[in-house]
Length: 307
Image 1 (cartoon, helix red, strand yellow):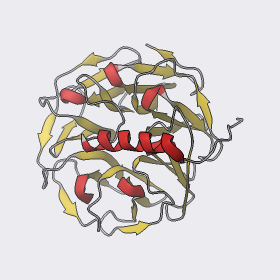
Image 2 (cartoon, helix red, strand yellow):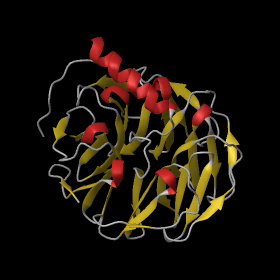
Image 3 (cartoon, rainbow, N blue to C red):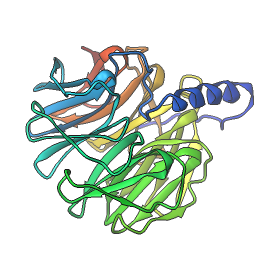
Image 4 (cartoon, rainbow, N blue to C red):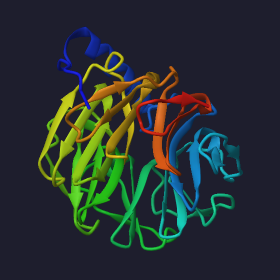
């Protein structure tokens, strides 16, 4: 796939974008959608269905990725992250919200040893790992009983993934932490000072995305290179998924970018100006979700249709 060559972030355009990004971050959440009500902030696919979560405790499910039906989460807080792993869905949100469900319909609130906003959750090596503000890292073997781990930072952590035997967490000021057991964490250089919202391990690569159209990539999760691209006036990049030999990245203003390796980048037409906050793949379909509960779908990551 042919990529686009773009310049580095500098000048007044960057300053304005960065100021706006900081304002969004201060209001909570790493997903990139606005804080108005009824916005999706994250999505996942598992157990034969899509699940999207967001503001006001929104949880919605879909069997086809196109038509979503809102369910009852039992909370009215912002929900920031969702994963399906080890036979259940786990959702994280503001004020240390953790919800679990075997089917995406009936949800159970779980207790957490913190009260900060939890931004994301992953699963690996038999452990759920959730991350959030003030450097918070929580681990659980079952998604129900959680304990606090020492991260070594007070910066907000916004994304976490597991791959190639390693957990990687990312966050504000370009923070990247790594761990092989989710207990002992070490900081590594990201090559950027921009906040990183999400990180993914796939196809032998780690790819992180964040503010000012920043994309960081690594072969091992330890040595990183980062770049900022002028996508829609340095849009905040909110989430990333990998399928069909492509990383698909979504962000504010309807930005969608594809890359086979985190290096060659191609911007795609999303046909929406809504902020896209989450993206997932399932049932042969990419599904991006975001502001005003927008749903944008694609069979290949290149051609998109708003549902």
